Length: 446
Image 1 (cartoon, one colour):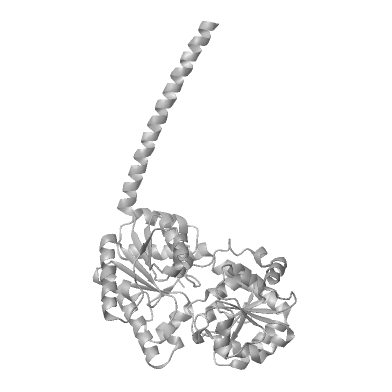
Image 2 (cartoon, rainbow, N blue to C red):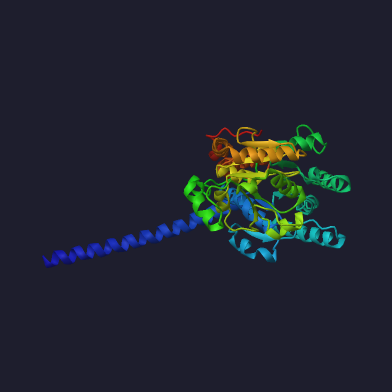
């Protein structure tokens, strides 16, 4: 028996040696597969630069795009500026990134220096696609890409600022749009109403320009906007933190204290509504109480300026409705976020907002220059809780159907597939992944 045990031990030892050798062979094969995959990716991946100047916008809107592209074997990078006041935001961006100045400057020496620096960065990166975002931060990247003969230059317009101005400033902003468009091969807009306005104003030909699906930059991630974050229990907790009465009606505004955002218009309408005398609140994110005092010259009853806030979900939880009375917008994310939170929307009937709000379905649209209509809409929403619940629910449903992030980014992939084919860019691996992603989806440009 002892001899047999000894022989069995020898066999087990030999089997262990064979297993170890097989493990070594598997490891070597894995190394070879990894090397082959790297070579395959190097041959087939299309290099893409996503360019925007402001780190907060880069984090909110462009990082999800770069993530999506890299998941489908594109070689995408995020290029932005390194702003000292936003180092925490920059640190939180986990996609491949590079710091290049692209914000427009009217100093000719600085402008030339920024173009030259951007050109040098492009020479080193050698991308097939440069995809730029926003009006003011697109001229330098597009001009640099044009001078460096980059095959595909995409200008992604986030709004038409000239619509909010008159006189010389309107002409300058319009001219900037015209130059950006002329430097690009392809032009994307974030809303259909902005696209229509651009065509009507002669910026585009009738068949030029696209919107991905129903619009927005990159949709919204509903994993961060779960309904329990905004239910009655969440509202009670948030209002206790803000020292707001449970039974008060709270109207929310998200934005800076700028005239083009309708800031002064909103304060005037709030005062005219007399809602504050009933114990109701106008809650403002992005504006401080000092901003409010500066705009009006006095404190305004019932208005609370929170300034910059870290947790926007708590803000929406505290609100019953959200308003945006702007002069111009691209596709306002405050409206999209509020809709995802199940809130009724109120906004001016202008390009951009008219795509974010369906009148009497997800909210109320008011004429731009009708102060009484804005006041009356605020009173109507404050006095009718059934209307708030009904339209808020429909606003959430619309987001689920049209603006979920995966849907919008899948449509972006299809757009990129069309670019690869149109401009004969070799990226078989990326195209294969895109086709697999979209094979069961009915994705169209609208």
